[in-house]
Image (cartoon, rainbow, N blue to C red; front, side, top):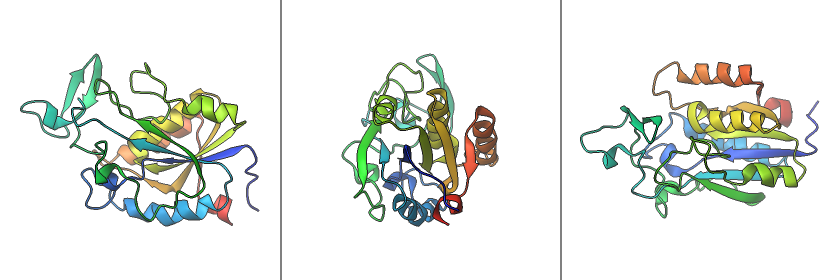
Length: 211
């Protein structure tokens, strides 16, 4: 029996070209989630997306730290920061949503990572929780109680979005076959699932909604 999706939102996190094959920060098999998300979109009346949207001078890019390479961890403005390849730069093709992802029913797009002084994994807050994207208030004002999270990457932006969703009081689900991990370390994806589950995120497969 299909789930009751009243007062529910499908949240699509960062399904952008740079996180997909041939992108600057490609997630292995990331493209496999797109048809799953498109199928899910047919079941939801309320759909919201997030978009990584960095200035080229963003401090999370290894290229902006002399002598540093992607994957290194530094202390940056009081936070531990993994350094990334240049990705999802404002106005670039890499920042655009994948062309096969259907946006026709989206209510809004919330951009993140625009402040060059702090990274932003979550769709709700930056990593220092100093700035709010407005997503939480938007969902609450629309009467949303349940948030179903999909997208990229499971062990970073998806995880932190799901954790913040729980912290804001939403009943939060991760659709496990509609996300993929970047796995900087091979165990990161599995660890992220354990962390989300422990925080109260409900792990389901798309079949719970589609069947």
